[in-house]
Length: 268
Length: 339
Image (cartoon, rainbow over all chains, first blue to last red):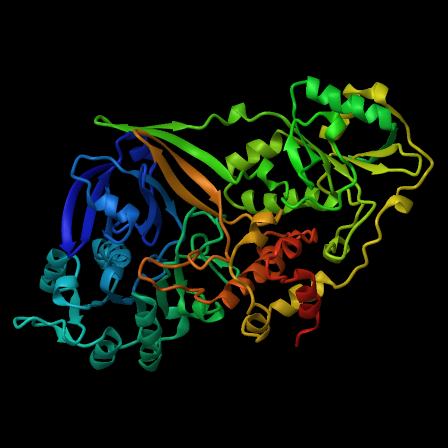
């Protein structure tokens, strides 16, 4: 795929807009919110990221990644117009059809907004299908917040309630958002659980502390969704890397309900 | 296909081997070299041995190579050119003298590679392979095939199974169409079935645990202290996975030389600390006991449920290879009894 556009999101974090070079591939390609792919630089290897753009936005896909290792390092060095490899889509999906007529509460932390951005835009593009949409997004520092332009856009939309927060010490003098960890901020703003689906995405530690708060707010186990980010290589249930108990995150996930998660051993 | 029985004389066996070789098949057969019995490609018949209990390496390399070239690529100023590997060029292979446990090992691998997405690299090699099995007439303390639903004369996984009779000649059981084709093409080498029964010519491998009971116990044993207690000496070297006929975990890595390179699929092991580590440094299986648990759980709990196959064929290779003497048989016997 061709790297059509590169956006610098945060320190070492970039978004690539990708377009299929082969017309047939572009025609055949379909995906749904929640799915992921294997992105590669030949000679360096493959990395697993979710597809961060919405399926309602046709003609391209986007991925957002932080420069961390060999592959993401090589990706980060690419310029617009260059080519990368892509395999996918893999994995299951957010059941957004089943969420019709409900309020949606999105809770994301740090670099975990990308997997959620896909479903956020997907539901915003089908806005009439859903009632209130609330987004709570936190990062370590103001600088680490990704999609700054889109956060602004969501903030200005009358049909979206956006709450941004940074960890204590991560604020700047002109920061107008909240200061505090995501679970704490969630508890403070205490959104109603009535007719509401909660979608949580973040580092394992954030997820573990967020679930109990949601339960306290009255969310039931099957109204809370998350995506797991286990290490993967193949993407289709063979390489043995992403097992959580008998489940493969790549096949049975990455989207799980809290109810399913509770039945899984603590291996994520 | 209904199982057919024939006799093949010792002398005819050599003729069959040579015929298969002359027909352009690659042959993978056990020979003794430097005091070790291992399978080698295209040995002369004189070198082939029938007396080994177990080779150190399993035979999975034939269908799941230690390093599989997935694609080749060339990168220059104009971009990257990717060339697919031509799997039609995979040679026909005869696996000569595989013990029943090893033959069954391919079934276990198949249950992984052909589950859901069909792996064409594995499949193309598997389709081109014929397994001429050899029943075991001897065993050692590490063998436990009878505890995992197999036996020293099990036909499952072989196309033809040979069993040495008291006369020195061999009973040939023809199990599959592939096996029948070989026999039909060399009909002059086979004779009417012998009167002698197979059973008297097999090793006696005592059943030591019930794998069904182990599977049942594992369902509730995730948090059991067993794992820590029994893995303290594990050094995470991965030898057990590398010699295992049913271990299929792999890594994908790129290797380059100048402008050209290959994307490779390489054997990996859930025993390695880096196997599951996230980019963030978070590791879902951060200590060795969790990795040892994964190994046993995968083979005896997850695979039976997800792949309808055990991930163990009772060959005992892992116990023989373990540098710190962790014995899987002892552990499975203990797991049958845990509360």
